[in-house]
Length: 109
Image (tube, one colour):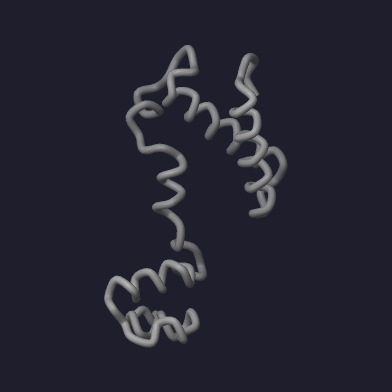
């Protein structure tokens, strides 16, 4: 972490690094991901001395992660499918498992 970073950013760094390790990243790659993410957040909030235009104008890292959720090999999560079924007013959704929800939503792939 950069000198003078706040305790909040230190915690954020450790949390991101730990999450990356749990996803199977190498220790070096996990540290790089965490450092880049925290540095970008510092730039967005005005804590850094310098900031690139992209760091300031781009969407936040947390928002980007949220947008990407459900894009992995397993597809959308059960909760995401359930919420969509709720929006579409699909009856019997509370008794459905993930596969049933996918079928009811026409997402068999």
